[in-house]
Image (cartoon, rainbow, N blue to C red; front, side, top):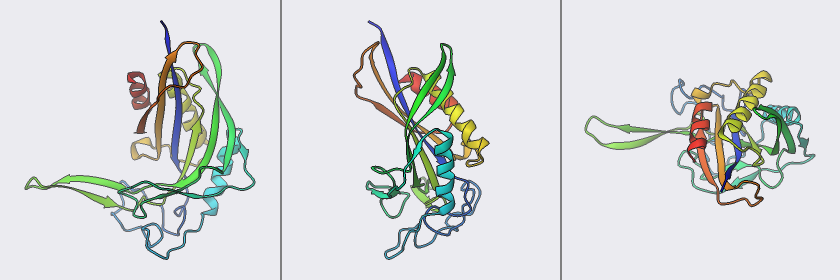
Length: 234
């Protein structure tokens, strides 16, 4: 009996804005900046603080949505994504779900069997989390430190339909999306710094079947090689 993979990707891309998604804190390189120097009551989740959407982040999100042939919604709504984030002090993420920025786009990729169109379910805006730094002291004591410089940085999430059928197709799709984002200068493309991260959703079914079976999600992949190898493993 022959089987085929059913793969969809969620891609998180940090947007090249000067300030964060919901406050005026400066966006800095979280790999080099001094920890916790670029946070405020809004991005650190203090009671009574008021988030206000970054206009430039919305503009960049719309630009990407149009480049991906999406239908931009006349109205989109932010909501709370309620689950525990140890590196986001509010304990929830401000994101979009039921009414995202844009829907129903596509990308055409080249494969060994010719061109294929990968449908894009939606494009939406949200905020990034901070970073956890795990350390062990000279005495052997272990602990985790939190850096909030990245908390609240604008993220664009691009969600595909499960239209890819191999690890190679998933990597090709990711490379095409990376090229689009960097060409438009909405993302630096520096995956070693985590500014683009891939999450692969994978299931397996009998070739020719239509059922979507139980899926495995691989989180926070920051290279094409890691994406292809981990997807192939699953």
